[in-house]
Length: 88
Image (cartoon, rainbow, N blue to C red; front, side):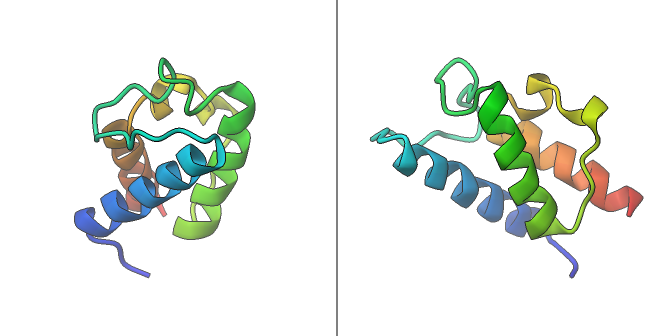
């Protein structure tokens, strides 16, 4: 499936929103909200989140990719997904 930039942003935002709901967080993050500093994504949650990205976008996220800096905010996650899609 081909993803447009808007589609990637929408899917990533939805996945992050689902995490917020599960954690009982009321505020929805913006594209530049720090997901790490806001405790939306932590090192354990990153593994689950990465698996969801792999499933949704059909990409492979390797152990070296599993740095919180790649998942700091929605915009960086979108850039990361786009880079993986361009290599697929």
